[in-house]
Image (spheres, one colour):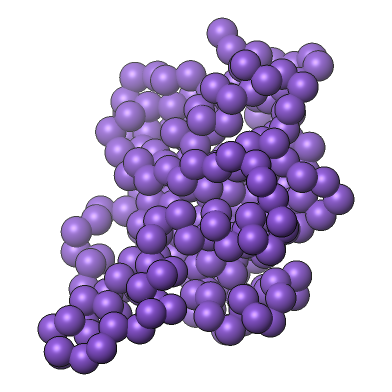
Length: 233
């Protein structure tokens, strides 16, 4: 079994609540204002709502330090921007240079490193409904070889554009979670694969954080046909 990980700091945001323990029961709402107070105006003007969520949470989670490795996880990434670009192609209009440059999957990771002036290596993960679990494995793998280091794990997504919603069976919710992780001196959280069961319809990222704040010893979820099991050591 791998070493457990400690959560040194966490920051969560959704349009409904900033408390993960309340998130499951909250009714989905429209986004009125995404938090962006720590993002310089020169960047803020060009950023999507998704990037603002991810980068703001990441900046808050690392307010007083620099993480040694960055893992940014999003199942769908900047899909609304891609949709806009495709619409421009269909209409035969000129593509937006800013929209094009910020439509890639590592947009948020890149913006974070620029704003934070971080030279840490980073990876961007997209792995279906289980994206957060695979991002956790990325963090765990790095820390297994660098036990004195820290990892910033950021997981974020938003409601799909209406044209794409028929292609998923999962409920659409908007959220962002940033975790600053390190190897636990004792105990901590561990993740293992488990047999698949009933598919979890909600995004698993907020469900994990709600569990981490509870006293339950085990969280078992199935996402994308793969079973995952987090435990407290």
